[in-house]
Structure formats: C-alpha cells, structure tokens
Amino acid sequence: MLAAFIIDLDHLLANPIFDSNRCSINFHPLHSYYAITVYFFLLWKKPTRVFALGLLAHIVSDSVDCLFI
Image 1 (cartoon, rainbow, N blue to C red):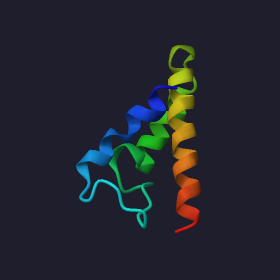
Image 2 (spheres, rainbow, N blue to C red; image 1 turned 60 degrees about the vertical axis):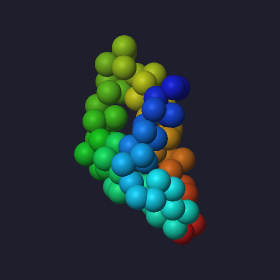
Image 3 (cartoon, rainbow, N blue to C red; image 1 turned 30 degrees about the horizontal axis):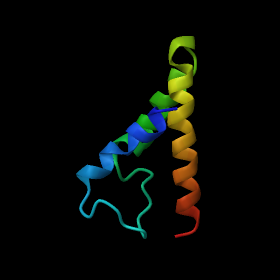
Image 4 (spheres, rainbow, N blue to C red; image 1 turned 90 degrees about the horizontal axis):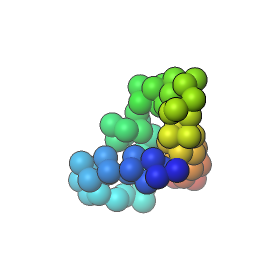
C-alpha cells in the first residue's frame, strides 16, 4: 500500500505543487489515463497485484476529490 503514497511524487512537478481547485486525474503523469491503464494490467500478475491495488485505491480517492470541484 506504500504505492498509494509514492504515486504523489509527480505532484512535485506541478506549479503550484498543491491546488485545491485542480483535479489531479489526467493532470499529473502518474495520474494520467495511460498510467491508470497500466495499473489495471498490473492486477493480472500475482506479484504486482498488491502494488496495483494501492495505486488504484489512490486513483479512486483522487477521483472522488474531482467530483466536488
């Protein structure tokens, strides 16, 4: 589940780093639709399944934030 925190490193590339009015889905590289597709493919292999669950849990929590902007 550490992956849920590591994915936020791409926020350091944004200016400003945090903006409460910005949806991070498809804004940051590790939150892009391409990256989310890779996270789903990681679910298929048993060694990467827990890693993928952490990443997808983070994406779900970020997408809930986007609903209320």
